[in-house]
Length: 171
Image 1 (cartoon, rainbow, N blue to C red):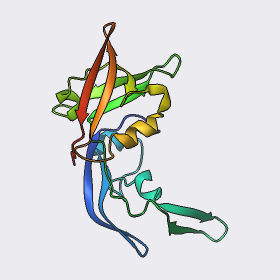
Image 2 (image 1 turned 45 degrees about the horizontal axis):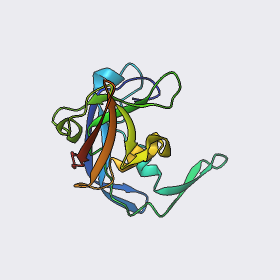
Image 3 (image 1 turned 30 degrees about the horizontal axis):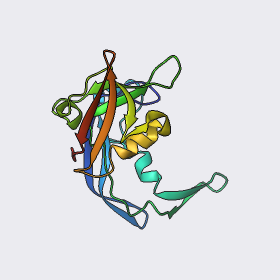
């Protein structure tokens, strides 16, 4: 999803990426399907997106007057690039923005293997109430470490279920 709407495409890794004197390995990148995005933006000079996961590794200063950007790595610069290891999309309910719901589940993903379903409500993670987490917290957790187990407490059909998801590197 982007500011201009839904974008279909692929996620992959760029083996090596240089930005000035900084070199990064195995960078996660998005490669949008040309047809789904060509109407929204000009793709003549690019074929993928690196995004905020790269930029968050820097302290950035914009010098608009002189037309340059100053980059300095921060404490996040050495952590490996990872992507979702669960295979599901979360969203907040549209009424109160308090309920965390599962919107989509990728085929053959850890979420599907754990028995999760679309429209399941997540009420706790690792025995902590869902209110203790932001969506960003959950997304970071879901890409934290392959083979990590996460316990979700799910509300479905007026019943509570516990589901264990084992994170898997998917790209």
